[in-house]
Amino acid sequence: MLWTTFVVALALGYLRRFNSPALFASAAMVIAAAVVIGGLIGWSAGRIGDATYWSVVIAAATFLSVAGDLAAPSVFRFSWSAVGIIAGAACGTVAAGHLLRRVIVGASASGIAMLLCSTAMSVHDLEWIFDLICAPIVGALVAVLIELILWLERHSYSPRYITASWLLCAVIVGNLLVPWVLA
Image 1 (cartoon, one colour):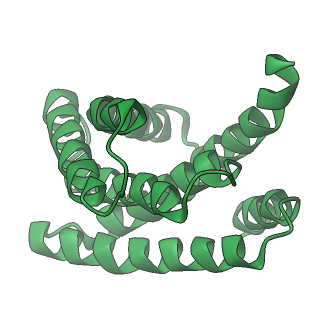
Image 2 (tube, rainbow, N blue to C red):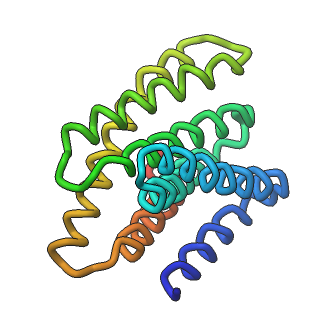
């Protein structure tokens, strides 16, 4: 419980620095969508718990990753959040130890999610093409990350929520370091 509270507080503190109530509302919508969509995808595959869990964790990570780009339209944040929701849920439907299957499912689901979301984008330029190319790559990497976390859970007796908490902390720290690195 402490880890979950710590990560939620850290995420809210990170979002607070942007001083945007709309960003908090967007985050709440993304997490709610992750619960519903993850549950539905998990239900259809008989793995409700895993699909919902990974949908929420990966959606939170992707939302936090793109939340800082306030110049981008909100559809950009929602598109990448949708990729996180779908990648997490789809990868959560694959049993541990099936890395190749998880990578194929994650990459395919992410590519399809970004393709569907891109229909809502008003501008189709090089950034749009870049997002379409990167989404399957991100989905494949999400699959590898989930498999790594599950492996750590099996071999180090570290519960997945602690490892996932560290993942979200790493995303926030990485986002905070970007301006410093690019300066």
